[in-house]
Image (tube, rainbow, N blue to C red):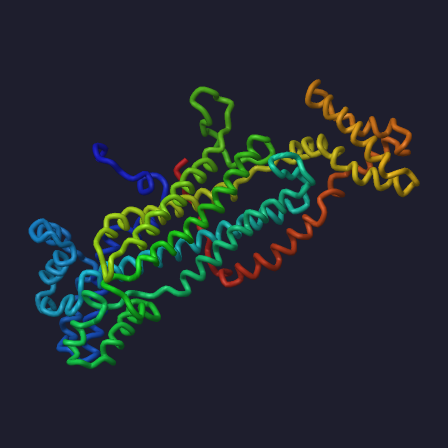
Length: 476
């Protein structure tokens, strides 16, 4: 259909696995699994639920009769009760005990937690993939000197690999946040209308231990270790804000990377991948625009702003529950995950296909290196008996003159020639050229890269050794 709005996150950017997690099919199948878990737990705790009823529910767990549910919802205006009804149509024997003692949030909120948790696990896998890919790039270029920048002004050189480690460091911090958030994943459980479990206390004839055990059994049957100890009718909406905080952190890291790549592509030092038949501009055929990095930046901006939604929703919940969260959650949470999924797909694609131009990097570095080598030149002259203060003044004068040649006349940097011709330095041009080797000015960048990759990164990725990194698919 081309006559109605469709989200670009679904139609263009996110991949199939993430889209499925937020699909109606995932949602309603999870509802049925939760109803089955509730029935099984109630049976184990002595309520009159039969195995025959449970088996009947399991037989229809995945073949959802959407037409019946949709027709019923038009009549009763309640999505959960419409699906209870539709499930009961398929399971006439189990009909009396489906959703027994529960409120709508039993299926709605537990499903939301399950989907967010599964989505975060998918994000985790892709994050590990990007870190692994960037690590290979960093190791490959750990020794390649490049001009570093502070304030986007030429500064002391680094290496291409060391710069990549800065991107990886951000992602490792994100991975820690993802792991922490997953480590404390828990369900809402079945708490009832205001979170007091009053209906279950009635069903279990005042047995508090069975009420407590009910939550634990539901958690175990759904693959979790525990439930929230207390709640209103819903789980605390603060969980949504915590989830999106993690996603926004990934977006921040990706945006920083994308900005660096866009600047490097402008400098013609490093480029994102560009297909043979790809068109960069409709007007300027020669252009190779960094559109993937730009898309990362664009989507990242959306995710970072989207965190305001769960912030405000969590802050404005009234007492045990209010429904002004629902419409907002339906938009803000899925779209944040879909956008981050798209960001990581792009991040993987770009980092896996980065093109480095060593000759351009070397050329730019050599133009700036004479200014940066003056400290070494001055120290060598001092060792030969020259006056440090006089040397400093002569270097300042020569540097200003050389800078004028470059900036005002468009000429080449002739600082070395000026120093060689000044007898106060007592050095020849040949000696100066020997001093100008770029690798002498990168400090410990190669060793820092090796240490970082061999320890910090290796330790972080050790638990993911068996993880298969899939090729990122993107719509260019």
